[in-house]
Each structure stands twice: as C-alpha cells, then as structure tokens.
Length: 69
Image 1: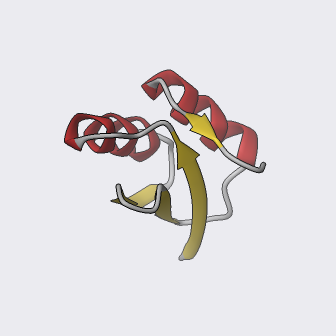
Image 2: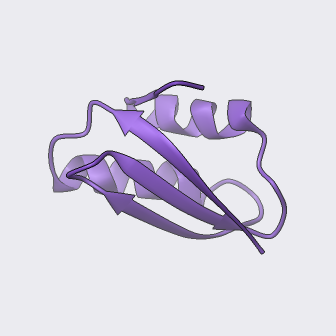
Image 3: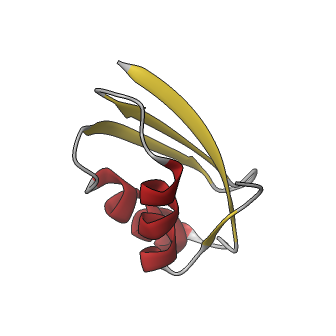
C-alpha cells in the first residue's frame, strides 16, 4: 500500500469533501481517501503509486484544483 498526500484548493464545505472523495476514490487502485476540509489536505491510500496527472484530473472533475503539483 502507498499513501500520498495532496493539497486541494477551493473546498469550502461538506459537499466539496464528498465530491473530491468520490472522484479520487474512483481512480483504479485507490483503497481509501481522507479529506481534511480545514487544511485542504487529501490523503490517498492506493495499491500502487498514483500518477499525479490522474489525481489532478479527478480533482478537476470534482471542480477543484490540485495545488503545487
């Protein structure tokens, strides 16, 4: 298992958390997604390292931005 932490900007509420969790959780190989609304940190556990562009696409699909990557 691999755990990676990403910074997501633009989240302001529980709906935001659910949208990001749902989209990132749909990436093949992802086993767990934890979203910390206060800090914007998204911690993803997956079976193998994830491609940053794949995570960025999922976050974009949810309507938010992956910061600093």
